[in-house]
Picture 1: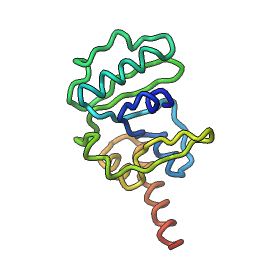
Picture 2: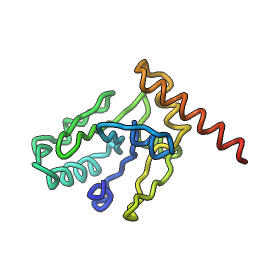
Picture 3: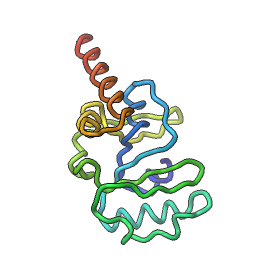
Picture 4: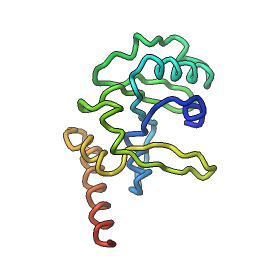
Length: 147
């Protein structure tokens, strides 16, 4: 993520890592990001990925990032799932649903906040997504009670 931020790639962390960034204890095997689908941003993303790990992303082109549901998975030191659209929502429509997470070494990473994740995961049939929704709703209720 450090390289993505350094190279000014526009992205939002979504999925299990975003759930954890919201404060829910959650493990995940991959990192899911939703990216801005402009050609300029995709070119920046590809340039960044080519400089990372073994460079498997060098075989990708901007044309591989079509505007539809589903992820492109890059497996290097860890699996990275890259989305253009999730549950019909794109980067621009999720901008208002983000927060910033400061990593221990000072890096600030954009991630989808609890309300955005609930909206994103509510329609999913996957059991772990439904557990995430329950945990995130509980987190929001606890936050409301503290106010």
